[in-house]
Image 1 (cartoon, helix red, strand yellow):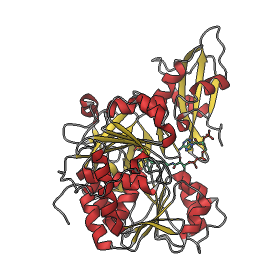
Image 2 (cartoon, rainbow, N blue to C red):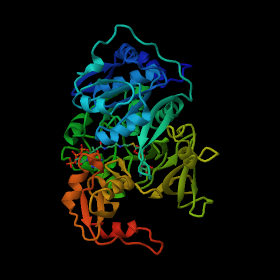
Image 3 (tube, rainbow, N blue to C red):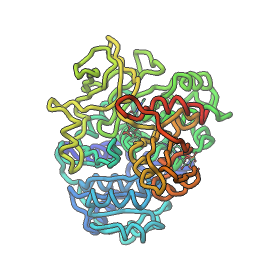
Image 4 (tube, rainbow, N blue to C red):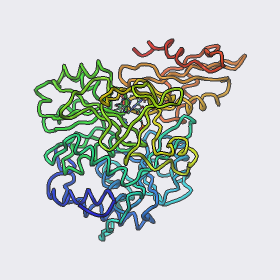
Length: 501
Ligand code: MLC
Ligand code: AMP
């Protein structure tokens, strides 16, 4: 192993051992071997340098998933840049905020977005990367390789934006030590081995697909069967060759419906992992009936990486629970009255080497959410059994999770309230068979004005990323309020609980 805290140095040490073994395989063909990793990332890092990228500066990336995107991430880490990946669904308006806030030295976007992104940029050099390796990023690749930058444990490796209850996105600053500690812990806990084969179906702009999945394979020297999107039939076709799959509950619900998936076809898999959103006990059970395999559910956050996990060995994977705090990670619960409680329910707080360094350029927000003793307030409400097992029972934060993606109602309410003729709105999540939760907007028109569902939906088109847009808009005369005048979202959720089921 290496003294350099740069996480890429640790990946490289493993790659050197793995040699010619395939790292990324797509549609049955090897697109990248471990032996290629050093030279390919070295040249790409030299290219980023030539574009003006420097160690410690930010690189903002909004591109479609591809093997080159994986290389770009690794090259950025190699150079010691701070990687800032963005959901490809974000609109120009959303992107403008991220670009202004991150002040990147380099921006990489899809070729089709080049002109629009250029208009939004206030700092940095723009290059493009397409799905098949086309784009100006890979033009003029130098023959030289950039060395692996020396980084300390507290240096930033990435900033991942996460929306907040105020509607404004916050950049979670993740250090090299945050990422490496979590990855090493999960490698041991989940029994990663060099002969593992990961079926990778997640986007690579979030913690789940970028860190939890890719880092596991990189630290184990394991092969990745690379899927650019999620097609259940393609996953089933790969399952005979795979050993590990990570997904959000929607992936498992859709896989359960795939006729080709059987205990025989899934028999070679050693681990199905789920997280990012609650996996209903019923979905857990149906997957087990279908495949004979028990999903291992774990719980995490952008700010903290993984926090708890059901056991891989030597313990039960209990449906509806998220398992035990990871080794080296402490959790505690705080009740409504502000005191710590043992069993809960209470808001879960977490401390450990995985907990982020704070929100980018938001010291006051950081101080509100990380206590002086280092515990981060997750906003998830949990109970804990005497043996440490955690069950998530609710959220203190007003958050909707659809298909594993977080949606903050406040942001959507602000967009709707700004529309002509709208007095106020309340955005809620109600059960959705495929996505877990579906977004519903309940809208009150101004006196004498008329507002229709179609008008609201059309107005939000292009303004908010598609996954955040309400699937239904209900126009009402007034919102239910309690004696304090607060909108009763629980009552609205009950009223519209059956909309998507
Ligand atoms: C797609 N759509 C969504 C959506 N994904 N709507 C709400 N929520 C989502 N997550 C929209 C599309 O724009 C489309 O809208 C319609 O839904 C149907 O799309 P689809 O083709 O069925 O969707 P698909 O491309 O198959 O994507 C579904 C999915 C994807 C579940 C595969 O959303 C996904 O990969 N989710 C994973 C997200 C993730 O990685 N989360 C981890 C965060 S990290 P229309 O109107 O155009 O038809 C984290 C920490 C942790 O949370 O613990 O891991
Ligand atoms: P994000 O901010 O996208 O990282 O999302 C983190 C949030 O996802 C957490 O605060 C939880 O609310 C939720 N989450 C993650 N894993 C699980 C899980 N296994 N069960 C329920 N919720 C989860």
